[in-house]
Image 1 (cartoon, rainbow, N blue to C red):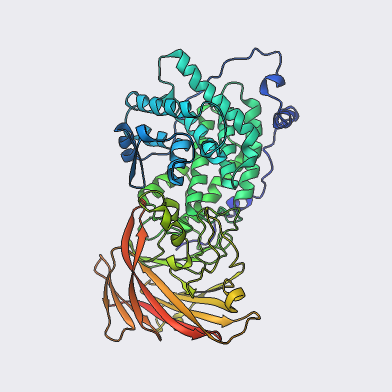
Image 2 (cartoon, rainbow, N blue to C red; image 1 turned 180 degrees about the vertical axis):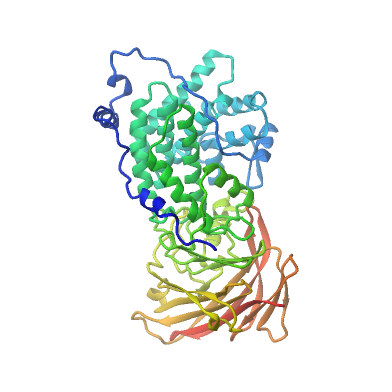
Length: 579
Protein backbone atom coordinates (compact mmCIF):
# COMPACT_ATOMS: atom_id res chain seq x y z
CA UNK A 1 0.00 0.00 0.00
CA UNK A 2 1.19 3.47 -0.87
CA UNK A 3 2.21 5.61 2.10
CA UNK A 4 0.91 9.14 2.47
CA UNK A 5 3.78 10.42 4.58
CA UNK A 6 7.52 10.23 4.70
CA UNK A 7 9.19 8.93 7.80
CA UNK A 8 8.87 11.25 10.83
CA UNK A 9 12.64 11.50 11.11
CA UNK A 10 12.90 13.01 7.65
CA UNK A 11 10.07 15.44 8.25
CA UNK A 12 11.63 16.70 11.48
CA UNK A 13 15.21 16.86 10.25
CA UNK A 14 14.43 19.69 7.88
CA UNK A 15 12.95 22.02 10.49
CA UNK A 16 16.27 23.84 10.95
CA UNK A 17 17.57 25.86 7.99
CA UNK A 18 20.15 27.69 10.03
CA UNK A 19 23.78 27.73 8.81
CA UNK A 20 25.93 24.69 9.68
CA UNK A 21 27.38 24.68 13.17
CA UNK A 22 30.98 25.92 12.98
CA UNK A 23 33.59 27.20 15.39
CA UNK A 24 33.83 30.85 16.40
CA UNK A 25 36.83 31.45 14.15
CA UNK A 26 35.08 29.87 11.17
CA UNK A 27 32.01 31.99 11.86
CA UNK A 28 34.16 35.11 11.74
CA UNK A 29 35.80 33.94 8.50
CA UNK A 30 32.36 33.36 6.97
CA UNK A 31 31.16 36.78 8.05
CA UNK A 32 34.26 38.53 6.72
CA UNK A 33 34.09 36.75 3.38
CA UNK A 34 30.42 37.61 3.07
CA UNK A 35 31.27 41.28 3.60
CA UNK A 36 33.63 41.15 0.62
CA UNK A 37 37.00 40.51 2.25
CA UNK A 38 39.00 38.28 -0.14
CA UNK A 39 40.32 34.94 1.02
CA UNK A 40 43.94 36.14 0.68
CA UNK A 41 43.27 38.92 3.21
CA UNK A 42 41.98 36.39 5.75
CA UNK A 43 45.43 34.77 5.85
CA UNK A 44 47.92 37.50 4.81
CA UNK A 45 51.03 35.54 5.85
CA UNK A 46 50.32 32.66 3.50
CA UNK A 47 51.86 32.76 0.04
CA UNK A 48 49.21 33.14 -2.63
CA UNK A 49 49.07 30.30 -5.14
CA UNK A 50 47.79 30.10 -8.67
CA UNK A 51 44.28 28.69 -9.20
CA UNK A 52 44.26 24.90 -9.13
CA UNK A 53 41.89 22.04 -8.51
CA UNK A 54 42.41 19.96 -5.39
CA UNK A 55 40.42 16.86 -6.42
CA UNK A 56 38.57 15.12 -9.25
CA UNK A 57 34.83 14.51 -8.91
CA UNK A 58 33.08 11.25 -9.72
CA UNK A 59 29.51 12.13 -10.61
CA UNK A 60 26.55 9.84 -9.91
CA UNK A 61 24.45 11.44 -12.67
CA UNK A 62 24.42 10.11 -16.20
CA UNK A 63 24.13 12.34 -19.26
CA UNK A 64 22.42 11.67 -22.57
CA UNK A 65 24.74 9.60 -24.82
CA UNK A 66 22.72 10.51 -27.92
CA UNK A 67 23.24 14.23 -27.26
CA UNK A 68 26.90 13.52 -26.53
CA UNK A 69 27.33 11.70 -29.84
CA UNK A 70 25.73 14.67 -31.62
CA UNK A 71 28.33 16.96 -30.00
CA UNK A 72 31.13 14.83 -31.35
CA UNK A 73 29.48 15.12 -34.77
CA UNK A 74 29.44 18.92 -34.47
CA UNK A 75 25.94 19.70 -33.14
CA UNK A 76 24.18 20.61 -29.94
CA UNK A 77 21.07 18.41 -29.68
CA UNK A 78 18.13 19.47 -27.53
CA UNK A 79 14.47 18.43 -27.63
CA UNK A 80 14.95 16.98 -31.09
CA UNK A 81 16.59 20.08 -32.62
CA UNK A 82 20.20 20.19 -33.85
CA UNK A 83 22.19 23.41 -33.55
CA UNK A 84 25.56 23.36 -35.35
CA UNK A 85 28.34 24.29 -32.93
CA UNK A 86 30.04 26.32 -35.67
CA UNK A 87 26.90 28.46 -36.09
CA UNK A 88 26.19 28.95 -32.39
CA UNK A 89 26.18 32.52 -31.07
CA UNK A 90 27.96 32.23 -27.72
CA UNK A 91 27.14 35.83 -26.74
CA UNK A 92 24.03 37.97 -26.99
CA UNK A 93 20.36 37.01 -26.70
CA UNK A 94 20.13 35.05 -29.94
CA UNK A 95 19.36 31.59 -28.57
CA UNK A 96 15.96 30.23 -27.52
CA UNK A 97 15.58 29.82 -23.72
CA UNK A 98 16.22 26.04 -23.70
CA UNK A 99 19.39 26.43 -25.79
CA UNK A 100 20.52 29.36 -23.62
CA UNK A 101 20.39 27.08 -20.58
CA UNK A 102 22.19 24.26 -22.39
CA UNK A 103 24.95 26.34 -24.02
CA UNK A 104 25.66 28.85 -21.25
CA UNK A 105 25.02 26.35 -18.43
CA UNK A 106 27.41 23.79 -19.98
CA UNK A 107 24.97 20.97 -19.21
CA UNK A 108 26.24 19.34 -22.39
CA UNK A 109 29.46 18.37 -20.60
CA UNK A 110 27.63 15.54 -18.83
CA UNK A 111 26.27 14.31 -22.18
CA UNK A 112 29.75 14.33 -23.70
CA UNK A 113 31.21 12.47 -20.71
CA UNK A 114 28.55 9.75 -21.05
CA UNK A 115 29.21 8.88 -24.69
CA UNK A 116 32.96 8.46 -25.02
CA UNK A 117 36.23 8.02 -23.08
CA UNK A 118 37.86 11.21 -21.84
CA UNK A 119 40.58 11.29 -24.49
CA UNK A 120 37.92 11.28 -27.21
CA UNK A 121 35.58 13.80 -25.59
CA UNK A 122 38.21 16.25 -24.32
CA UNK A 123 39.06 17.83 -27.71
CA UNK A 124 35.36 18.55 -28.32
CA UNK A 125 34.91 20.06 -24.84
CA UNK A 126 38.04 22.19 -25.19
CA UNK A 127 36.98 23.47 -28.60
CA UNK A 128 33.52 24.55 -27.38
CA UNK A 129 34.95 26.00 -24.17
CA UNK A 130 37.48 28.06 -26.15
CA UNK A 131 34.74 29.40 -28.45
CA UNK A 132 32.54 30.30 -25.49
CA UNK A 133 35.42 31.99 -23.63
CA UNK A 134 36.42 33.98 -26.73
CA UNK A 135 32.85 35.33 -26.91
CA UNK A 136 32.70 35.97 -23.14
CA UNK A 137 36.27 36.90 -22.10
CA UNK A 138 35.13 38.84 -19.04
CA UNK A 139 32.13 38.53 -16.71
CA UNK A 140 29.33 40.75 -17.95
CA UNK A 141 25.61 40.77 -18.59
CA UNK A 142 23.08 38.99 -20.76
CA UNK A 143 21.98 35.34 -20.72
CA UNK A 144 25.53 34.04 -20.30
CA UNK A 145 25.75 35.81 -16.95
CA UNK A 146 22.34 35.08 -15.53
CA UNK A 147 22.97 33.66 -12.06
CA UNK A 148 21.27 30.36 -12.95
CA UNK A 149 23.37 29.80 -16.07
CA UNK A 150 26.55 30.94 -14.32
CA UNK A 151 25.96 28.64 -11.35
CA UNK A 152 25.25 25.63 -13.56
CA UNK A 153 28.26 26.47 -15.74
CA UNK A 154 30.73 26.70 -12.86
CA UNK A 155 29.39 23.51 -11.27
CA UNK A 156 29.65 21.66 -14.61
CA UNK A 157 33.21 22.94 -15.10
CA UNK A 158 34.23 21.70 -11.67
CA UNK A 159 32.50 18.31 -11.90
CA UNK A 160 33.73 17.62 -15.46
CA UNK A 161 37.07 19.39 -15.13
CA UNK A 162 39.05 16.46 -16.63
CA UNK A 163 37.34 17.10 -19.98
CA UNK A 164 38.57 20.70 -19.91
CA UNK A 165 42.01 20.21 -18.36
CA UNK A 166 43.40 17.32 -20.39
CA UNK A 167 45.31 19.75 -22.60
CA UNK A 168 49.10 19.73 -22.52
CA UNK A 169 49.47 23.46 -23.21
CA UNK A 170 50.23 24.92 -19.77
CA UNK A 171 49.29 28.44 -20.82
CA UNK A 172 45.86 27.36 -22.03
CA UNK A 173 45.38 25.17 -18.95
CA UNK A 174 46.14 28.17 -16.74
CA UNK A 175 43.60 30.21 -18.72
CA UNK A 176 40.91 27.59 -18.06
CA UNK A 177 41.62 27.55 -14.33
CA UNK A 178 41.58 31.34 -14.22
CA UNK A 179 38.11 31.26 -15.83
CA UNK A 180 37.01 28.98 -12.97
CA UNK A 181 38.27 31.46 -10.38
CA UNK A 182 36.93 34.56 -12.16
CA UNK A 183 33.48 33.00 -12.43
CA UNK A 184 33.49 32.04 -8.75
CA UNK A 185 34.47 35.59 -7.77
CA UNK A 186 31.66 36.97 -9.94
CA UNK A 187 29.18 34.67 -8.19
CA UNK A 188 30.51 35.78 -4.80
CA UNK A 189 29.21 39.28 -5.61
CA UNK A 190 26.09 38.53 -7.64
CA UNK A 191 24.51 35.34 -6.26
CA UNK A 192 22.04 37.38 -4.22
CA UNK A 193 20.66 38.97 -7.42
CA UNK A 194 19.40 35.72 -8.89
CA UNK A 195 16.32 35.60 -11.12
CA UNK A 196 14.45 33.32 -8.69
CA UNK A 197 15.12 31.07 -5.72
CA UNK A 198 16.12 28.02 -7.74
CA UNK A 199 18.61 30.16 -9.67
CA UNK A 200 19.99 31.35 -6.35
CA UNK A 201 20.30 27.74 -5.16
CA UNK A 202 22.26 26.95 -8.34
CA UNK A 203 24.60 29.87 -7.61
CA UNK A 204 25.17 28.89 -3.98
CA UNK A 205 25.72 25.24 -4.96
CA UNK A 206 28.44 26.27 -7.41
CA UNK A 207 30.09 28.54 -4.83
CA UNK A 208 30.14 25.74 -2.27
CA UNK A 209 31.62 23.37 -4.85
CA UNK A 210 34.27 25.97 -5.75
CA UNK A 211 35.12 26.33 -2.08
CA UNK A 212 35.63 22.59 -1.89
CA UNK A 213 37.58 22.03 -5.10
CA UNK A 214 39.55 25.22 -5.75
CA UNK A 215 42.71 25.85 -3.73
CA UNK A 216 42.40 28.10 -0.67
CA UNK A 217 38.62 27.80 -0.76
CA UNK A 218 37.86 27.36 2.93
CA UNK A 219 36.28 30.80 3.36
CA UNK A 220 34.22 30.43 0.20
CA UNK A 221 33.00 27.00 1.31
CA UNK A 222 31.85 28.33 4.68
CA UNK A 223 30.13 31.26 2.95
CA UNK A 224 28.55 29.02 0.29
CA UNK A 225 27.20 26.43 2.73
CA UNK A 226 25.49 29.08 4.80
CA UNK A 227 23.88 30.76 1.78
CA UNK A 228 22.87 27.46 0.19
CA UNK A 229 21.01 26.14 3.22
CA UNK A 230 19.24 29.46 3.68
CA UNK A 231 18.23 29.57 -0.02
CA UNK A 232 16.97 25.97 0.10
CA UNK A 233 14.82 26.91 3.07
CA UNK A 234 13.21 29.62 0.94
CA UNK A 235 12.80 27.29 -2.05
CA UNK A 236 11.20 24.19 -0.53
CA UNK A 237 7.70 23.88 0.93
CA UNK A 238 6.91 21.94 4.09
CA UNK A 239 6.38 18.64 2.25
CA UNK A 240 9.47 19.04 0.03
CA UNK A 241 8.00 20.50 -3.15
CA UNK A 242 9.71 23.52 -4.71
CA UNK A 243 7.61 26.70 -4.71
CA UNK A 244 7.51 26.92 -8.50
CA UNK A 245 5.41 23.71 -8.32
CA UNK A 246 7.34 22.52 -11.39
CA UNK A 247 8.55 18.90 -11.49
CA UNK A 248 11.37 20.03 -13.81
CA UNK A 249 12.53 22.45 -11.11
CA UNK A 250 12.22 19.64 -8.57
CA UNK A 251 14.50 17.52 -10.75
CA UNK A 252 16.97 20.41 -11.10
CA UNK A 253 17.17 20.91 -7.33
CA UNK A 254 17.79 17.19 -6.77
CA UNK A 255 20.50 17.12 -9.46
CA UNK A 256 22.29 20.12 -7.93
CA UNK A 257 22.49 18.46 -4.52
CA UNK A 258 23.64 15.14 -6.00
CA UNK A 259 26.48 16.87 -7.83
CA UNK A 260 27.44 18.82 -4.71
CA UNK A 261 27.51 15.62 -2.69
CA UNK A 262 29.98 14.25 -5.23
CA UNK A 263 32.18 17.31 -4.66
CA UNK A 264 32.25 16.65 -0.91
CA UNK A 265 33.14 13.00 -1.56
CA UNK A 266 35.99 14.06 -3.86
CA UNK A 267 37.74 15.94 -1.04
CA UNK A 268 36.72 13.33 1.57
CA UNK A 269 34.63 15.83 3.48
CA UNK A 270 31.23 15.31 5.11
CA UNK A 271 28.46 17.66 3.90
CA UNK A 272 26.33 19.48 6.47
CA UNK A 273 23.51 17.18 7.64
CA UNK A 274 20.90 19.70 6.46
CA UNK A 275 21.84 19.04 2.81
CA UNK A 276 21.18 15.31 3.07
CA UNK A 277 17.91 15.96 4.90
CA UNK A 278 16.78 18.36 2.16
CA UNK A 279 17.63 15.81 -0.53
CA UNK A 280 15.56 13.20 1.30
CA UNK A 281 12.70 15.70 1.48
CA UNK A 282 12.85 16.55 -2.26
CA UNK A 283 12.43 13.02 -3.64
CA UNK A 284 8.96 11.91 -2.38
CA UNK A 285 7.04 14.83 -3.98
CA UNK A 286 8.66 14.06 -7.33
CA UNK A 287 7.48 10.46 -7.06
CA UNK A 288 3.95 11.80 -6.52
CA UNK A 289 3.90 12.93 -10.16
CA UNK A 290 5.01 9.62 -11.70
CA UNK A 291 2.48 7.70 -13.77
CA UNK A 292 2.00 3.96 -14.06
CA UNK A 293 4.66 3.93 -16.82
CA UNK A 294 7.22 5.42 -14.40
CA UNK A 295 7.37 8.69 -16.37
CA UNK A 296 6.52 12.21 -15.27
CA UNK A 297 3.15 13.93 -15.47
CA UNK A 298 2.77 17.08 -17.59
CA UNK A 299 2.56 19.86 -14.99
CA UNK A 300 3.72 23.49 -14.92
CA UNK A 301 5.32 23.34 -18.34
CA UNK A 302 6.91 19.89 -18.00
CA UNK A 303 6.67 17.16 -20.59
CA UNK A 304 6.45 13.45 -19.93
CA UNK A 305 10.07 12.94 -18.84
CA UNK A 306 10.72 9.22 -19.47
CA UNK A 307 10.89 6.61 -16.74
CA UNK A 308 14.55 5.79 -17.41
CA UNK A 309 15.72 9.30 -16.61
CA UNK A 310 13.64 9.45 -13.42
CA UNK A 311 14.86 6.01 -12.31
CA UNK A 312 18.50 7.02 -12.89
CA UNK A 313 17.96 10.22 -10.91
CA UNK A 314 16.37 8.44 -7.94
CA UNK A 315 19.14 5.84 -7.97
CA UNK A 316 21.79 8.57 -7.99
CA UNK A 317 20.08 10.31 -5.06
CA UNK A 318 20.31 7.19 -2.91
CA UNK A 319 16.94 8.05 -1.36
CA UNK A 320 14.58 5.13 -0.88
CA UNK A 321 11.04 6.30 -0.20
CA UNK A 322 7.48 6.29 -1.48
CA UNK A 323 5.38 8.91 -3.24
CA UNK A 324 3.22 11.27 -1.25
CA UNK A 325 -0.50 10.72 -1.79
CA UNK A 326 -1.46 14.12 -0.43
CA UNK A 327 1.30 16.64 -1.17
CA UNK A 328 -0.95 19.44 0.02
CA UNK A 329 1.75 22.08 0.43
CA UNK A 330 3.18 21.37 -3.02
CA UNK A 331 -0.37 21.15 -4.29
CA UNK A 332 -0.79 17.75 -5.93
CA UNK A 333 -3.06 14.84 -5.06
CA UNK A 334 -2.32 11.28 -6.15
CA UNK A 335 -4.53 8.19 -6.22
CA UNK A 336 -2.92 4.85 -6.98
CA UNK A 337 -5.68 2.30 -7.57
CA UNK A 338 -4.89 -1.11 -9.05
CA UNK A 339 -3.14 -0.46 -12.37
CA UNK A 340 -4.38 3.14 -12.50
CA UNK A 341 -2.70 6.35 -11.30
CA UNK A 342 -4.56 9.66 -11.06
CA UNK A 343 -2.88 13.02 -10.45
CA UNK A 344 -4.78 16.21 -9.59
CA UNK A 345 -3.59 19.81 -9.39
CA UNK A 346 -5.27 20.91 -6.17
CA UNK A 347 -3.58 24.23 -5.37
CA UNK A 348 -3.24 27.76 -6.72
CA UNK A 349 -0.56 28.22 -9.38
CA UNK A 350 2.84 29.45 -8.16
CA UNK A 351 3.08 33.15 -7.46
CA UNK A 352 4.78 35.10 -10.21
CA UNK A 353 8.21 35.45 -8.57
CA UNK A 354 8.51 31.67 -8.24
CA UNK A 355 6.89 30.65 -11.53
CA UNK A 356 8.86 29.16 -14.41
CA UNK A 357 6.67 28.36 -17.38
CA UNK A 358 3.74 28.74 -14.95
CA UNK A 359 0.42 27.23 -16.06
CA UNK A 360 -3.24 27.96 -15.28
CA UNK A 361 -3.91 24.29 -14.52
CA UNK A 362 -5.86 24.35 -11.23
CA UNK A 363 -8.17 21.29 -10.85
CA UNK A 364 -6.79 19.64 -14.00
CA UNK A 365 -6.09 15.92 -13.72
CA UNK A 366 -4.15 13.19 -15.51
CA UNK A 367 -4.93 9.47 -15.57
CA UNK A 368 -2.84 6.50 -16.66
CA UNK A 369 -3.62 2.78 -16.69
CA UNK A 370 -1.27 -0.17 -17.03
CA UNK A 371 1.57 1.97 -18.32
CA UNK A 372 -0.52 3.95 -20.83
CA UNK A 373 -1.50 7.64 -20.60
CA UNK A 374 -5.29 8.02 -20.95
CA UNK A 375 -6.11 11.57 -19.82
CA UNK A 376 -3.24 14.07 -20.03
CA UNK A 377 -2.38 17.75 -20.16
CA UNK A 378 -0.67 19.08 -23.27
CA UNK A 379 2.51 20.02 -21.37
CA UNK A 380 5.77 21.04 -23.03
CA UNK A 381 5.80 24.82 -22.44
CA UNK A 382 9.26 24.48 -20.89
CA UNK A 383 10.44 22.75 -24.09
CA UNK A 384 9.32 25.59 -26.38
CA UNK A 385 12.22 26.61 -28.60
CA UNK A 386 12.98 23.04 -29.61
CA UNK A 387 10.54 21.06 -31.75
CA UNK A 388 7.76 22.81 -29.83
CA UNK A 389 7.63 26.29 -31.45
CA UNK A 390 8.09 29.28 -29.17
CA UNK A 391 4.80 30.73 -30.42
CA UNK A 392 2.93 27.83 -28.81
CA UNK A 393 4.36 28.40 -25.33
CA UNK A 394 1.59 30.75 -24.17
CA UNK A 395 -1.13 28.42 -25.42
CA UNK A 396 0.41 25.38 -23.74
CA UNK A 397 0.26 27.22 -20.42
CA UNK A 398 -3.42 28.10 -20.80
CA UNK A 399 -6.30 26.46 -18.95
CA UNK A 400 -7.59 25.05 -22.26
CA UNK A 401 -4.36 23.03 -22.64
CA UNK A 402 -5.24 21.11 -19.46
CA UNK A 403 -7.88 18.54 -18.64
CA UNK A 404 -10.24 20.76 -16.70
CA UNK A 405 -13.08 23.26 -17.11
CA UNK A 406 -12.78 26.73 -18.63
CA UNK A 407 -15.35 29.52 -18.99
CA UNK A 408 -15.51 31.49 -22.26
CA UNK A 409 -11.94 30.34 -23.05
CA UNK A 410 -10.60 32.54 -20.25
CA UNK A 411 -7.76 31.23 -18.12
CA UNK A 412 -8.50 30.53 -14.48
CA UNK A 413 -5.27 32.42 -13.74
CA UNK A 414 -3.84 35.07 -16.07
CA UNK A 415 -0.96 33.74 -18.20
CA UNK A 416 1.74 36.40 -18.68
CA UNK A 417 4.93 36.50 -20.75
CA UNK A 418 8.28 35.00 -19.68
CA UNK A 419 6.62 32.15 -17.83
CA UNK A 420 4.97 34.37 -15.23
CA UNK A 421 1.37 34.38 -13.97
CA UNK A 422 -1.04 37.11 -12.94
CA UNK A 423 -4.25 37.28 -10.93
CA UNK A 424 -6.77 34.47 -10.77
CA UNK A 425 -6.87 31.47 -8.46
CA UNK A 426 -5.86 32.47 -4.94
CA UNK A 427 -7.76 29.91 -2.85
CA UNK A 428 -8.26 26.17 -3.28
CA UNK A 429 -10.18 24.01 -0.84
CA UNK A 430 -9.51 20.26 -0.80
CA UNK A 431 -11.32 17.42 0.93
CA UNK A 432 -10.03 13.87 0.55
CA UNK A 433 -11.70 10.81 2.02
CA UNK A 434 -11.99 7.05 1.68
CA UNK A 435 -15.42 5.65 0.72
CA UNK A 436 -16.85 2.23 1.44
CA UNK A 437 -18.56 0.18 -1.26
CA UNK A 438 -21.63 2.42 -1.48
CA UNK A 439 -19.51 5.19 -2.99
CA UNK A 440 -19.36 3.43 -6.36
CA UNK A 441 -21.91 2.51 -8.99
CA UNK A 442 -21.79 -1.24 -8.28
CA UNK A 443 -21.77 -0.99 -4.53
CA UNK A 444 -18.73 -3.27 -4.48
CA UNK A 445 -15.24 -2.39 -3.27
CA UNK A 446 -13.99 0.89 -1.88
CA UNK A 447 -13.06 4.16 -3.51
CA UNK A 448 -11.16 7.40 -2.92
CA UNK A 449 -13.09 10.66 -3.22
CA UNK A 450 -11.41 14.04 -3.72
CA UNK A 451 -13.45 17.23 -3.77
CA UNK A 452 -11.67 20.49 -4.58
CA UNK A 453 -12.74 23.99 -5.57
CA UNK A 454 -11.04 27.19 -6.76
CA UNK A 455 -12.02 30.86 -6.97
CA UNK A 456 -10.33 31.72 -10.26
CA UNK A 457 -13.62 32.70 -11.96
CA UNK A 458 -15.26 34.47 -9.04
CA UNK A 459 -14.00 37.97 -9.87
CA UNK A 460 -15.10 37.82 -13.54
CA UNK A 461 -18.18 35.59 -13.41
CA UNK A 462 -19.15 35.22 -9.76
CA UNK A 463 -18.76 31.43 -10.04
CA UNK A 464 -16.65 28.92 -8.11
CA UNK A 465 -15.44 25.82 -9.93
CA UNK A 466 -15.83 22.68 -7.84
CA UNK A 467 -14.59 19.28 -9.04
CA UNK A 468 -15.44 15.92 -7.47
CA UNK A 469 -13.47 12.82 -8.48
CA UNK A 470 -14.24 9.31 -7.22
CA UNK A 471 -11.79 6.56 -8.16
CA UNK A 472 -12.58 2.92 -7.44
CA UNK A 473 -9.86 1.05 -5.55
CA UNK A 474 -9.37 -1.42 -8.42
CA UNK A 475 -8.79 1.45 -10.86
CA UNK A 476 -11.63 0.38 -13.19
CA UNK A 477 -13.89 3.41 -12.77
CA UNK A 478 -13.52 7.15 -12.39
CA UNK A 479 -16.63 9.23 -11.71
CA UNK A 480 -16.49 12.97 -12.02
CA UNK A 481 -18.68 15.97 -11.46
CA UNK A 482 -17.79 19.57 -12.29
CA UNK A 483 -19.96 22.24 -10.71
CA UNK A 484 -20.09 26.00 -11.18
CA UNK A 485 -21.44 27.39 -7.93
CA UNK A 486 -22.59 31.02 -7.53
CA UNK A 487 -20.49 33.15 -5.21
CA UNK A 488 -19.22 36.68 -4.87
CA UNK A 489 -21.17 39.84 -5.72
CA UNK A 490 -21.41 39.68 -9.50
CA UNK A 491 -24.85 39.51 -11.09
CA UNK A 492 -26.26 36.16 -12.23
CA UNK A 493 -28.04 37.26 -15.42
CA UNK A 494 -27.03 36.24 -18.90
CA UNK A 495 -25.39 33.15 -20.39
CA UNK A 496 -21.79 31.99 -20.50
CA UNK A 497 -19.94 29.38 -22.51
CA UNK A 498 -18.33 26.44 -20.73
CA UNK A 499 -15.90 23.87 -22.13
CA UNK A 500 -14.86 20.76 -20.23
CA UNK A 501 -11.76 19.25 -21.84
CA UNK A 502 -10.18 15.79 -21.55
CA UNK A 503 -6.91 15.66 -23.55
CA UNK A 504 -6.06 12.09 -24.52
CA UNK A 505 -2.79 10.22 -24.61
CA UNK A 506 -1.22 9.70 -28.05
CA UNK A 507 -1.93 5.97 -28.25
CA UNK A 508 -5.64 6.06 -27.41
CA UNK A 509 -7.98 5.03 -30.25
CA UNK A 510 -11.53 6.40 -30.31
CA UNK A 511 -15.00 5.45 -31.51
CA UNK A 512 -17.90 7.83 -30.91
CA UNK A 513 -21.26 6.50 -29.76
CA UNK A 514 -24.48 6.97 -31.73
CA UNK A 515 -26.20 9.17 -29.14
CA UNK A 516 -23.26 11.60 -29.00
CA UNK A 517 -22.97 11.28 -25.22
CA UNK A 518 -20.44 8.45 -25.19
CA UNK A 519 -17.01 7.65 -26.61
CA UNK A 520 -15.17 4.31 -26.54
CA UNK A 521 -11.45 4.45 -25.80
CA UNK A 522 -9.16 1.60 -26.80
CA UNK A 523 -5.70 1.31 -25.17
CA UNK A 524 -2.68 -0.50 -26.65
CA UNK A 525 -2.93 -3.17 -23.92
CA UNK A 526 -6.27 -4.24 -25.40
CA UNK A 527 -8.45 -2.77 -22.68
CA UNK A 528 -11.60 -0.86 -23.67
CA UNK A 529 -13.00 2.10 -21.76
CA UNK A 530 -16.27 3.98 -22.03
CA UNK A 531 -16.53 7.72 -21.44
CA UNK A 532 -20.07 9.02 -20.84
CA UNK A 533 -21.34 12.56 -20.41
CA UNK A 534 -24.29 13.04 -18.10
CA UNK A 535 -26.05 15.84 -20.01
CA UNK A 536 -24.24 17.33 -23.04
CA UNK A 537 -22.79 15.80 -26.22
CA UNK A 538 -19.10 14.92 -26.39
CA UNK A 539 -17.15 16.35 -29.33
CA UNK A 540 -13.80 15.11 -30.63
CA UNK A 541 -11.21 17.78 -31.39
CA UNK A 542 -7.53 17.92 -32.29
CA UNK A 543 -4.90 18.32 -29.56
CA UNK A 544 -1.19 17.78 -28.99
CA UNK A 545 0.96 16.26 -26.27
CA UNK A 546 4.66 16.86 -25.59
CA UNK A 547 6.56 13.65 -24.89
CA UNK A 548 9.64 13.31 -22.71
CA UNK A 549 11.98 14.21 -25.58
CA UNK A 550 10.18 17.51 -26.18
CA UNK A 551 8.44 16.27 -29.34
CA UNK A 552 4.87 17.52 -29.95
CA UNK A 553 2.68 14.54 -30.87
CA UNK A 554 -0.74 14.92 -32.48
CA UNK A 555 -3.56 13.56 -30.38
CA UNK A 556 -7.26 14.16 -29.68
CA UNK A 557 -9.37 15.61 -26.91
CA UNK A 558 -12.91 15.05 -25.67
CA UNK A 559 -14.77 18.34 -25.27
CA UNK A 560 -18.09 18.90 -23.55
CA UNK A 561 -19.37 22.36 -24.49
CA UNK A 562 -22.48 24.12 -23.25
CA UNK A 563 -24.14 27.50 -22.82
CA UNK A 564 -25.28 27.88 -19.24
CA UNK A 565 -26.81 30.65 -17.11
CA UNK A 566 -24.61 32.64 -14.77
CA UNK A 567 -26.54 31.08 -11.91
CA UNK A 568 -24.37 27.98 -12.32
CA UNK A 569 -24.67 24.40 -13.51
CA UNK A 570 -23.22 20.94 -12.96
CA UNK A 571 -21.68 18.45 -15.39
CA UNK A 572 -21.37 14.78 -14.49
CA UNK A 573 -19.30 12.25 -16.42
CA UNK A 574 -18.02 8.69 -16.12
CA UNK A 575 -14.92 6.86 -17.36
CA UNK A 576 -15.27 3.12 -16.90
CA UNK A 577 -13.34 0.06 -17.99
CA UNK A 578 -15.45 -2.32 -20.04
CA UNK A 579 -15.43 -5.98 -19.12
